[in-house]
Image (cartoon, rainbow over all chains, first blue to last red; front, side):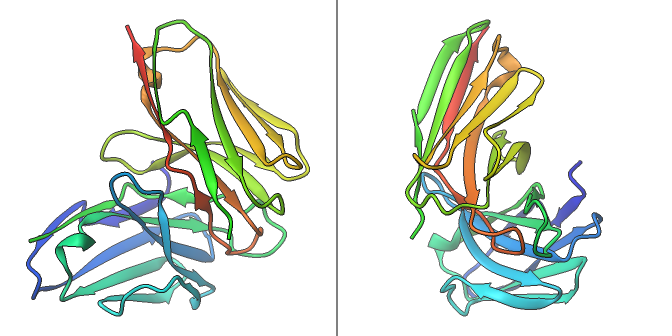
Length: 115
Length: 113
């Protein structure tokens, strides 16, 4: 148990569906992250939120829409995805303030399959 | 752009052996380096974090070293056990705020009983 919880753990959706991934952290952290993990590729940083403000968008297509209503919750809204978007989506959190260790804590991931 | 390389990509050894996993990074201006473990279909578990000012960190049978100037880190696993079988990921950060991590592709480790 890392203190970062992701739901759902598995999701199958068609290309025309709209779905959302949810992440919640119980660590009192201020920064939250979305990563994508595809087969045979390194983890790719998608979005970063620090104190609820988006600080990084790593050229992610607009069919992925993040939302961070508070420092404990992070969502990834999915719309008109492509089969190549099938991957493990990992959420992480860290303290977020400068001068800290910068250590990241990850959730178990949401396995997404796009048909 | 920071790039992280892990060698070997895969490793299979008999139980009880000591082994070393290697990680290299192209930009030495890092803030910290983290080693993670990932079991199949699971998330990442943090094993060790080394700050840029540190040379090594130890936790149980694991020891990680950092040579920042040469852009290298090693993860040493002593007396390996079948339960150590997993993918080991190395990642570096450029800052201690909310900078995120740059990852390598990992080393897939199998410990044979």
